[in-house]
Length: 283
Image 1 (tube, rainbow, N blue to C red):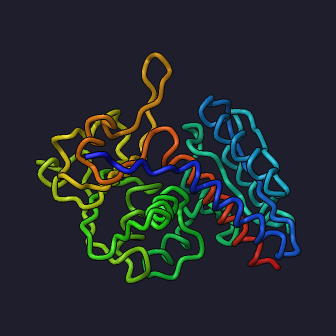
Image 2 (cartoon, one colour):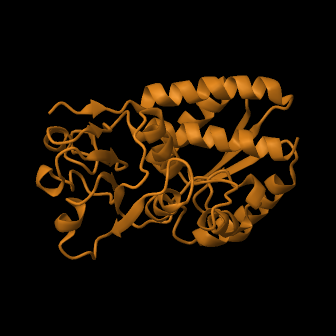
């Protein structure tokens, strides 16, 4: 069968276009500040991409770059200043942080109403009971992709491979809700799951977010699966691939996301979406 290729670039572009119209009606310039500690090359690329798109949308966008030796108290102080700045509606601290800084302490320092990543325990708790303020960007982007292609998870078995706080767990919370574009039966698999292929073959919708190149192979999925690849891995020659063996799985799938160009663009689009919602809270 010939799988539908789910185009994250085009979907993200449509979302950004809608956000521009929303911002024009807002009467307020959304402010997004990203904080990068250290000089991790991948983080540099992500921060730069986020900044460019924010400026194109008309945001007040600022990137704060701090040396890797920045202490935890110093970083906390920076964030507290941003919390108090009324022109900053969204704060994003780029992860991972240097080993000497406790990421959870930093996440909990961010004002929950400026937590556009959706990682603060306050926002995670609200998501778990179905009254979210901000939803983590990547899993929200996955839901919006399914919506854009009219692939409703209602009543479907969604299998998520990965249990991180950034993707796996919030993805499960999103799809299990009694809400539109949810109402799924959800199973989470991870690195300690036994006979994982037996479970992934049951998936109507498979979300791979385990961080291992081409982990999901064609023999691990059933015919007609909707395969969503959240993974971003890099081969020795510099080319990117996901957690799903695209070529093999695409021969069996009803629909599949590519890497790059699938979920990645949606993550940034959802960051912009969350920042606009944060600005509305201060209007």
